[in-house]
Image 1 (cartoon, protein in one colour):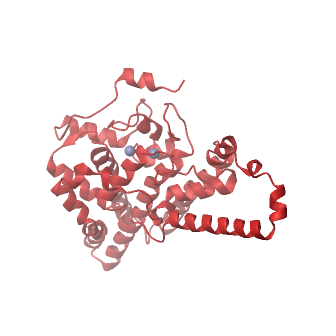
Image 2 (cartoon, protein in one colour):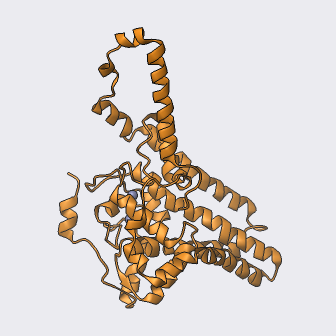
Image 3 (cartoon, rainbow, N blue to C red):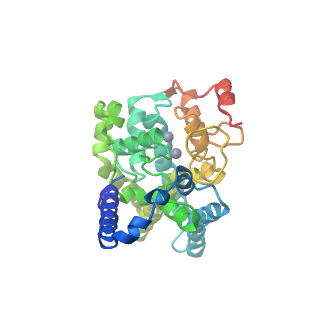
Length: 348
Ligand SMILES: [Zn+2]
Ligand SMILES: [Zn+2]
């Protein structure tokens, strides 16, 4: 995701310098008072620090996250209902669903499971198509997305994680700040870690480099296709505009929040059936809306598995499609954990 604005690290450094300068001034002007203070008693212990930096999953966490994520979706459904029949109709509903499936699966199957984790192999043509469809989700060029996500796995919920919600303190304010940062705030903050070492394979691949470089072209295509279809089907300019609106703008809004919820909701709220060194969680709602990506604790336990929903009731649409591709011969060497490995990683 493109960084924007100033460096968080430099802001923090400046703030630290200000604090230290203030402290020196106080020390000079009020040396008598400072002399009475035992500096050692004013140091935060490891336990105190841990309590602030690693907040438990409180009820406030869950309620705040639930309202923040589900609320806008309910608002969107209400708008659809109110507009039905004059600005929203079956034509635009189909455009919205088809474009949502195409760009969403482009992210989950292409950007994530294929290019980031190499969970299966496929032909160069399918690689190209998945790269283009993933780009239409407007989540950044292929190389940057993959580098950022590999960095997330390497440093999950540590300081260098690009989008961990777990470093903003406890209480309602800390939870809201953490949720906002993990959901989309991190996109507007300059990276503090060099991402170039994370994508040696993609840097050596001319086809994928080209797909990544032409990112703006694929984004434009993602808006043009529903606009043209809307115009041709209804034979009107209004149809083209509404096709652009529902199949383009609204579709991107839903794909964005479904994807970002994996970073925010799935590191705050849900079940942890597997032992992992981070705060990843399985979340049913995200599992369905984000095509299987919401089984995120499973994913952190077995990152290179093409299958994220490991139990029969953990519906994983992306894996269903990959399995279908395997059956017709356009995907092979599909990676899945063995039953023995799954049993060995179960949380006790
Ligand atoms: Zn994660
Ligand atoms: Zn991943």
